[in-house]
Image (tube, rainbow, N blue to C red):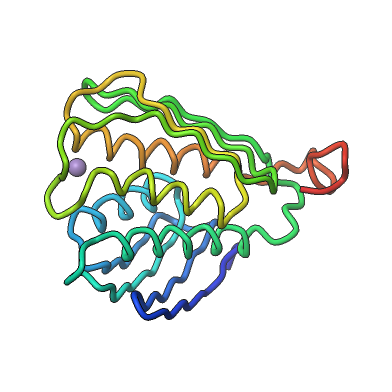
Length: 195
Ligand SMILES: [Mn+2]
């Protein structure tokens, strides 16, 4: 079955049900009500070889903010829960991902200490039905809820669809690496003995 978990989160703004398997095959069933966001989370799942079942009912009559941010909170919490005691994980993962003219760097440390650096400028306010400023909000929520150190940086890129998709794919590849099990690691990879 792999390292997996199921989470439900209900507030006055969103109702989220998520099932995440870190040791999956890239299979997803995602409905957030935001087409472009579904496309991005589908890419994340596929390229990270996770399995993700996700349904979100958000207050899209307001805007996309709560739906995207809360999905980030739940994804972060699911990553943390599925990782459990973090025994034998590689802990670090990174990717420099090209997508046509775009080049995105993503580096992760599953340290248990949340830290977030995001240097990805956009030149349009939206892509489809998705607001570009929500990319930062989403990954901030993921990094804090999962307690990971997360750096995302644009090295090159012009097309905003490519830039956002590059970010989600680079994050997927870096997270796949950081969550991988290495049987040389007895216990957790920390001189402190805890992550
Ligand atoms: Mn695309």
